[in-house]
Image (cartoon, rainbow over all chains, first blue to last red):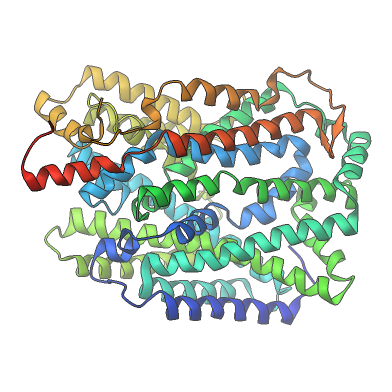
Length: 499
Length: 87
C-alpha cells in the first residue's frame, strides 16, 4: 500500500496510538493479575465479562486482511464476495456445535488450553502431543503472516519513513510488554480499544467513499455494463467454493486455539451467549461494509489487475484525504484501524502460543512437576524467543519452502473432530482421532505444497477434514478403546447430559 | 433440578439451520441473471443477504431458548458437597 500523503504524520499517529494502548493496558489491566497461575494469567481468571469478551472475540477474528485484502477481493470477484458475510456468521454456527458443552466441561476441570481437553478425553500422550504440535505449528504460521502484514502496513502508511523491520519491532515490543504484565486481561482490554477503532475506521471509510466516488447503486449499474460477470449469479463452482468457505471458516475459526480459550475465559454461560449473539451481527458492520467499499472502488478505479487491485484501499484513501483536512485526519484514523486490526489478532495469537508452550509443552512434557509460576515464566520467555525467530523470517523470508509457512487454517482445523465427535461419542478412540488428525493434515499439506489449493472449489483443509472424520470414525470401530477407557472418556462429559 | 438445554441435542434446530445456510448460496438461481437491482445489490445478493439476516436471527433464538447448561455445574458441585447422587 502506498500512501504518499501520510509520511511523518503517519509515524506520529502510529507511535501515539501504540503508546496509548500500552499506557491504558498497563494502567488498567495489570493490577490484580496473577502471574503465578496459568488460568489467572492466560484466561484472566476465567472472569471476562460480556463487553470485554465480545470485543476480544471480535477484534481477534477480524484481522488487517479484512480491512485491506477484502475490498480488493470484492473488487475482483464482485458480488460473489458477499460470501464473506455469511461465512463470518458461520463461525457462530461452528461454536454451536461444541461450545455450550465445552464451556461447562472446561469450568469443571479447570482447562487452560485446548490440549487440556485432549488430555482429559483421550488420556494419551501421543494424541495430546500431535494435537499440540498441529496447533502450535498453525499458530506460528498465523503469527508470521500477521507480522509480515504489520511490517507492510507500517512501511506503506509511513511512505517508507519507517523501514519495515523497525516498525514491526516497535509494535511487537509494545505488545510483549503489556502481555508480559497483564496476560489475557491486558490483551482483552487492548482488543476492546482496537475493536472500537476498527469499527469507526471501516464505517467512516465507506461513508467517505460513498460521498466521494458515488453510491453503491451507481457502481453496481456501471459494473453490470463493464464487467457483468462480477454482478450476475455466479457459476456453480463459485457456489461450491462458497460452501467450502462455510466449512473452512465456520469450523476452522471456531476451533482456533485462541477462540477455544475465549470459551474458557468467559465468566459465565450468560456472558458467552451475550457475546456470541453480538458476534452474529458483526459481519454486517465489517465484511459487508468492506464489500461495498470494494464495489464502489470498481467505479472509482476501473480496470485494475490483481496487483493493482491490492492497492485499492490506499488509492481510494489518497483521493479522499486530498479533499479536506477532516478527511485527511479521518483517513489517518482508518489506518490506525488497520494497525489496530493486525495488533489485536497478533497479541491474541502470541498469548495463545505462549500458553501452549507453558501449559502443554513444558507443563505436560518437559517438567510436569513445575509449579504454575514456573510454567508461566517458561511460556513467556520461550514465546518471546519464538516471536523474535519469526521476526527474522518475516524480515528476510526464505526463497524456497515458502509453502511451509502458509499452512494455517488447513492444519488448525484438523483438531476439530476431537471436539465435534469427542464431546458426544465415547466410541471415538485414541487411534482413530490420532490417525484422523494426521491423515487430514497430510492431505491438506500435500494439496498446499503441490499448488492445488482447491478441488472443484473445495479447499484442501476442508477435504482434509472430511478425510480426517472418515478415518477417525472407521478406525474407532476397527481399533476401539477398552471398555474401561471408554467409561473414563465418557465421565469427562456424561454429567452434562440429562434426559 | 433445572431443565438442561443443549443446541446439539435439540434435533429440529439443525434441518432449519441447514436450510437457511444452503438457500443462502445462489446455486439454485439462473446463472448469468442479475436483475432487478435492489438497493444497489443484484437480486440474488439481496436474497442471500436476507438469508444471512435470517441466520443471525435464528442463531439468536437458539442461543436464547435452546442453550442452558450452567445448572449442570451447580448440580454437580452440590452433589459433590453432599456426597449424594441424583434423585
